[in-house]
Length: 275
Image (cartoon, rainbow, N blue to C red):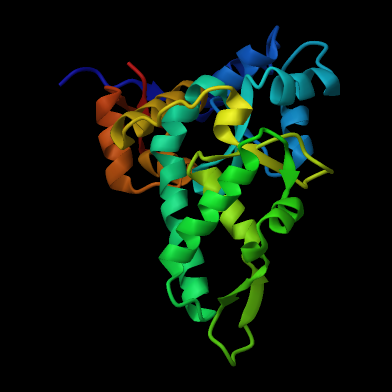
């Protein structure tokens, strides 16, 4: 067996500081976005702050330009059902893997709510409404969820959450849940915010000016795991599972696909790094 490299906590922190642009800042937004693999984006300001911390002289307008004009960095629900801003070239990998997992979970949630709310054919209703929404958005005009709901009256309904008669039971609007589903599937695209933390929507094809195909699942997870190891590694299998919001099976396969090598961490755990 070959020599196993050992990494102290200091070694790992030093690598993070260098890779994350905290020792020497990046020259461009694109360099920083690719170095970080994905930028947290649940709050609208988070992408701006992440880039401000890493890129020399960056302004709010610069970040807005990358997000909404050049669209070189694109917001996508994927990892752990959380909104991230990905370098555009990484979207097909996210769509084929982590985002697809979120989309399956979201579809199940919506169908369950529709069924509990009395919809006779939840799958048929959802398919028809999704087609109507995408037809409305196909002209490329950015619309808020409320504006989409006005254009597609079927979206005005609610779905049931929780067990009726219990303190956790509630009826919630279905429109935001359908938009989240379409976004996770890579069919709906998040456009410029109408207001802080209030997204506007279009289609992914209209937003990107193209209709890229998702990768297959294994390729997608491999690309994301390669990015994580380059940005954060070495780290444990559990670290990668948490970041992706994926299964251990998917992560183990991806680690094998990128030829990750085991290393020894200071606490005695086994970590993984790129060759």
